[in-house]
Image 1: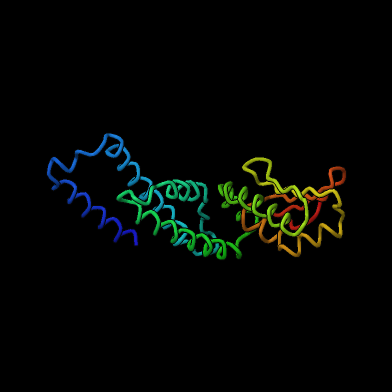
Image 2: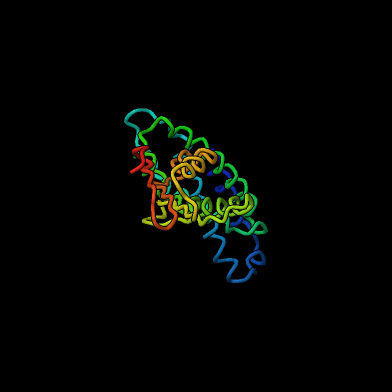
Length: 207
């Protein structure tokens, strides 16, 4: 995939070089933004390739996803009407699929290593908390669900009627512990504001 893409970009560069002077009568902003968009796509392709070729073999270095998530975020900001818009959209969709495959491969990797690899998924963790709180509200439960801590790796559930049976019911019904691991959360805290139950994701135990 990378070789084909590089070939396309080489061809694109040749075509640009052959354009007449009037082709460069765009605004200064357009001229300056184009190289930046191309750089974003190049970085995204490199990050995608790193996780696409990961095999989870013993001793193989686990690609960290910090650059990967930054690349995805940058791709999503490229306007669809830009010359690179269609490519960015297609690449973003491919990265979503590659990410899901990568998480499945990490299933055979030590949990602590997996959490390290997923440390950059800050946006994913924040989004999960926001969406989960809305889902609880739709079920009639006014529950505060937030993220905190370094890189938002702590997932917090606050509910005025929280007790241990409720904790286990919430966790099991939403497969929260599995989801927390797959998103890179290190700790899940359930509290009623006074008493707390803390789950250690790497150790798979309550503290």
